[in-house]
Image 1 (cartoon, rainbow, N blue to C red):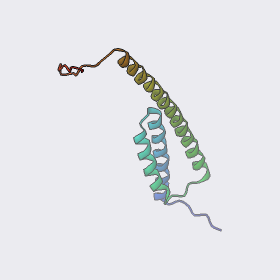
Image 2 (image 1 turned 180 degrees about the vertical axis):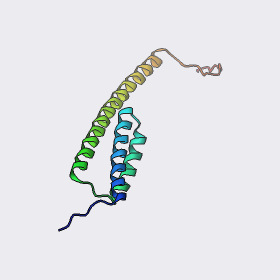
Image 3 (image 1 turned 45 degrees about the vertical axis):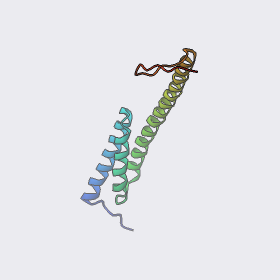
Image 4 (image 1 turned 90 degrees about the vertical axis):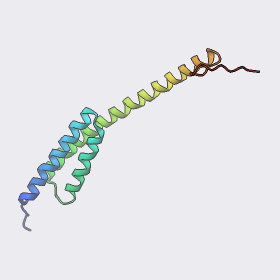
Length: 113
């Protein structure tokens, strides 16, 4: 069975797939998740028509795993910030509750009956 040699266009597509994956990795390391998504969207389009050889596939998978690791770190950081934010909100609510009645910001006073 003859092996099909990649055409010049397929070779260009392979370079583009690798470049998009590298850009996604760099964007993930910078925390630019919108750019990561855009790179993977473009890469998906190219991969529909490009057959990746096993060596290229291994390189792409290795970079994808690095992007995944960066995502896990980012998610953990966000989860920590959400917990911290909830604690601050709870503390502010407690301080507001113990500080007594609140007055409107415009200076109007209300009498309680």
